[in-house]
Length: 246
Image 1: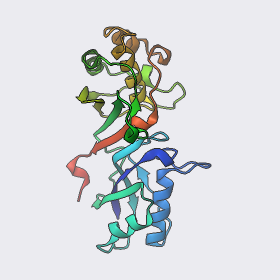
Image 2: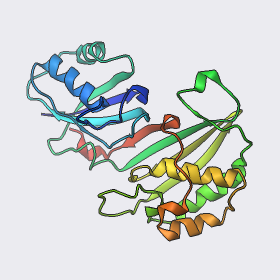
Image 3: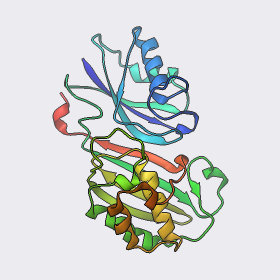
Image 4: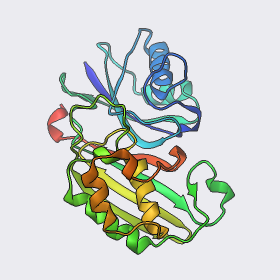
């Protein structure tokens, strides 16, 4: 039987989601805990990859297991997992449900603080200069006009297409914190951090709002801004069609 596991994690201690040969990943830690608890080797397939240091408020993974669970499965699994990874739910799904391929949208947030905040050292990017949030929001709207985002993708990647449908992109001001919200059907590797880095150039007055068009149309990563640090990025929501559930 196939199950969807809903998780959240604080990414500082991990080299991203995906299992790696010489570094600790979230996938590895969860698989090891599940395998101990269920007394057989369990492999999970995640909804996507997050880079080293990126956080997730919601991410799903699927796995197959034929025996039944006790009602205490979530409590017992969380007891095995480290304090920076938590299981939120575990639900049965249809046999062909896929955590990655059946996701219809993904949402991210990027957090910036503009005033020194010792409690945000590992959770938000500190930018010491004033940012023009209005100009950054004007530029963010331009993203909705395009589909090809090669200019925001890592140069060496094996994707078949650079097309993404951005459904929402805007900045929210909360006192000394700026939060970038973006939702799309899919994301390229490093895409959100590269977009934020470019929008910061506009917010700092180093680039005009309308230059965003030329950057995207160039399809050239070197035309866009530098990627912002990983610790300010959060995967916040993944949506699936109701048809995958039993």
